[in-house]
Image (spheres, rainbow, N blue to C red):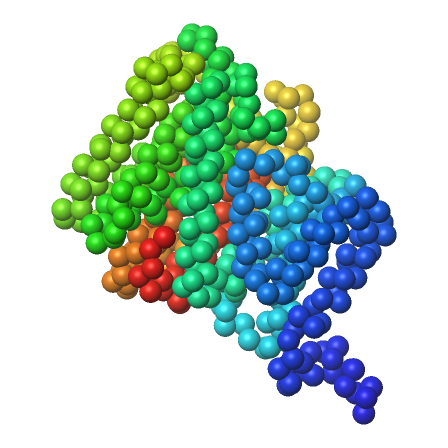
Length: 490
């Protein structure tokens, strides 16, 4: 009889029938991988306190680990600044990736044991599962058919892991309190990143606020000959994602504390302006246009009036006052901005850039033709004439997606895009709650407005800071529709 109980334990029936906590089965698995990793790499013993703290969070408040993932992937810290708690030879998982994998294993085991998949069920769940199945197939395809290096294939696939945030959000963010905690934390992180960006821009790139500011670079911008501190897209992703939900809330008169929304918008838009990142600037304008088209009546005029007000304050705060008080080293801000956006019309270097982008696109398209349906696989490379080396991606995200995952992978992605947009519009029309509408329209605007940016950057494949947020954004309308927010504003 005792042996039968242990046999049932293996299949989960014993736990399911007796309502035993699935963590009882999950913790030995975590302990096994932890012990195995420590034996292979003894240097990880120094991380033992982190392991213990993470396991405690995993048991009692797993939603805080999701927030930790957002913090690690969308703030000022570069990914290689984090330890690799799980490491096997030359292959290791950085801390945020480890958290995702561990949480995902816990979610799968708990759902299987309880025989309850309602939390993660939605119209987008099937396409997301299909995407991960195709990712696994693409890795195998690259290794078997294209003779890709195993290590390179694994390194190329690691960014896709962050799409698993979609399932984690659906499963663990199941109460209004948890949802509001997630929203508040994201806004606070965006604010901190924006303030750091503004301060670093004003003092210039020569003196870095923190030595690990690899996302701040000094560059001489064209004819102005002024060295400026630019912000890499890593921190811009969380700033841009937080901006639109806050902006939609700002133009809704029914919401309270508008002065707080105003302050958030000032630092967000200021940080985006001084990044000199053209794709984000154009996406920002496109996003405002989307909101203007969606809202109706007097809110359209309110949007224009509030936007003009915010832009005037932005000019006052980041340009006029710092220059007058001598806080800012960059004196030709408008000249730099004009040159940055007009270089495609006036600069020979820009013409050269466009020429190489065209050559790059034609080169990767020739590679796509070799395997247009299933792609060349994740880890496959092609010869890049500009770099004189083999590379895995191009600046065009959609062509990169076709190269790796083929037409099948692109169609799966388009199916996910369609379901997200459809569900967002559906829930936006159904709810009468102003705060819920602000969140749904805000996140929908974030996603649609960055779609054109993928023509110049492989944000759906390479940029883990965007992929991590996309997994969360795709789950938000589903979470909001299930639990609501009980009128609790951030």
